Structure formats: structure tokens, C-alpha cells
Length: 99
Image 1 (cartoon, helix red, strand yellow):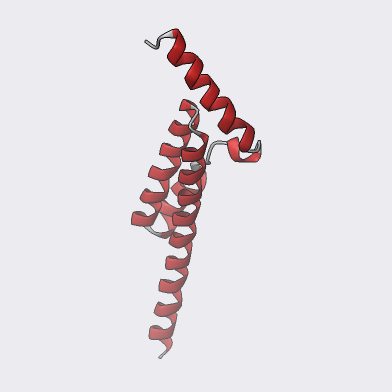
Image 2 (image 1 turned 45 degrees about the horizontal axis):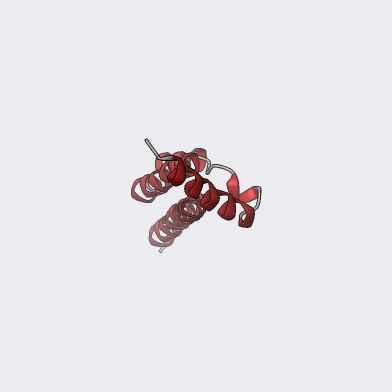
């Protein structure tokens, strides 16, 4: 339980950060792309993307917009890494199979 002074200070910090971050950045990261990447593309990179997406959603629910944005970016990064890794493996198999 926060004291009144602590609650006011926490509210002030939240509103200062909220003024800097735009409405697009306040959206929760989607869990759909990491799940698809884990199932179809690469399980390890997909799981990392899911973890970052879920942690980003939790940070957003707590009001930590900077951390939520950082984790959302990492989730998207690992999703794209999973897609790129799968494309690399498919191309390597095609080269090896036709060579």
C-alpha cells in the first residue's frame, strides 16, 4: 500500500513519461506474430519473441511505457529473426538439394 506522498510522486512520474510517448507506442504488443513464428518458423526465436511480448504487455499494464516499448521492439526483432532464419534454412536446403 502506497502512502499518499508516494502515490502522488508515482503519478507524476507516470504522467511525465506518458506525455513523451505517443499513442502508437502505448499499444500493447501483439502475441499473434510470435506464436506464428514459434509454430511455423523457429521455436527458440519464437519463444523469445513471445516472452518479450508478454513482458511488454505486463510492463504496459503497470504503466512502465519505456520498458513496454523496449520489450515490444525486441519482440518484433526476434519475430523477424525467426522469419529470416527460416528463409535462410529453406534456401540452404534448396541449394544443397539441387547441388
